Image 1: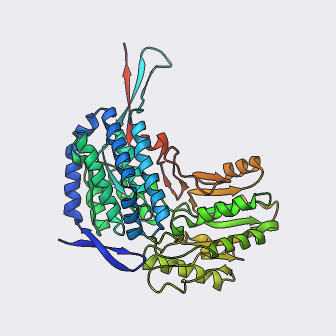
Image 2 (image 1 turned 90 degrees about the vertical axis):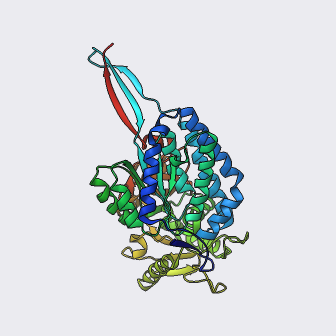
Image 3 (image 1 turned 135 degrees about the vertical axis):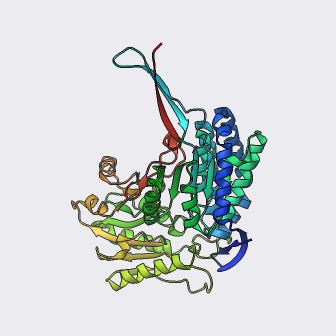
Amino acid sequence: MAVIEVVDPSTEEAFASVPDVGVPGAVRAVDAAAGASSVWADTPPRTRSVVLRRAYELMVERTESLAETIVRENGKPIAEARGEVAYAAEFFRWFSEEAVRMHGSVVEAPAGGGKQMVLLQPVGVSYLITPWNFPAAMLTRKIGPALAAGCTVVAKPAAQTPLTAVAIEAILHRALAEAGVPEAVVNLVTSSDAKGVTAAVLGDPRVRKLSFTGSTEVGRLLLAQAAERVLNCSMELGGNAPFLVFADADMDAAVAGAMVAKLRHNGETCTAANRFFVEAPVADEFAGRLAVAMAELPVGPGLDPATRLGPLIDAAGLAKVERLVRAGVDGGARVLTGGGRPAHLERGWFHEATVLTDVPPDSPLLAEEVFGPVASITPFEPGEDVVARANEVEHGLIAYVFTGDVGRGLAVAERLEAGMVGVNKGVVSDPAAPFGGVKQSGLGREGGHEGLLAYTEAKYIAVDW
């Protein structure tokens, strides 16, 4: 049987493998999900809740083994991997509570003469495509609401990080079995043939939902494919987050917020701060303090407890970061710290934490999503409409604002073209809150009650009694 070799980004060596099931495996997965669909849809919400709560408990019990798996295949530091497991498990707990809150409504028709009843029903077999940067959390953020709503799933993890998904599938199968429900409610497809598998799954009339997290470019292609069968779609796509610092901001908080907003999972997140706009009177201070903080980060393999910055996911990811930094410097940007490969690491796809200033406005560093530990700082003058500059790009996933004036912070947040805004906060993600973007950053929301609704269809019944 063909296999996918899983490579450790810190050594560039394969250390494990999983079956590459290809299109035949995907077809089997759809068959299984379709076969279990009516059983799961008819399963009482309380039972669905119990399954998800049990999955949460099993994940928490296995925190260390799951975290180590994430580090080996993904590269993030072990402390962050433990945090991801806790975050990922919380989606199961949150949606275990939401499973019993699929409230419809019954109201009298405004014109009288009858009632208007609205039922929320599961959309059906759901195809979930997840990325490599959060191999646990992106999976649970989709599976949790799908199961809560009564949908069966076919999940395809990224080929770089299948091991975490395999472990979570085993946890869910145990939780389902303990509840006396078929394991076929959850089906995993590990394959390097992303195009072939996706074409086969989306072409099956039994599949009614597509949820994808990944690049805007791939998202556009998937939307075109989904349009052929008018599939219900949720898209969490790329970002190019602005990070605005006003002169009255608490500088300690702004630097601390920048560190987490920029460097969470080595900078390889769609929510990573990419474009730093700092008011001119404090621009030099902010840049200098951020450079010092970044320069002090220990860089190394993620399993080393001292590591705070691990390797990038693969050679292509490293090459992109190196290209963008080189383009910035060639265009006139100054390197305050970092800029290349750490001298003490001969193997692995490592890049230093990097701070650049005087970045020209037409630099690719500002136009593209870097997906690496690189902060590009651009001053703006007091009174300048920096929000207009922040809104110039096609993406609109998240933005960050740091200011001592909460009123201004809220006013700026309202004008920013982003689905999420952190005001004096460097992290905003929470399973209880809706996550998603505007413009080219996606469609729909994950998390919160909105995440549950994404896997339902509203059925209206007109009743006269």
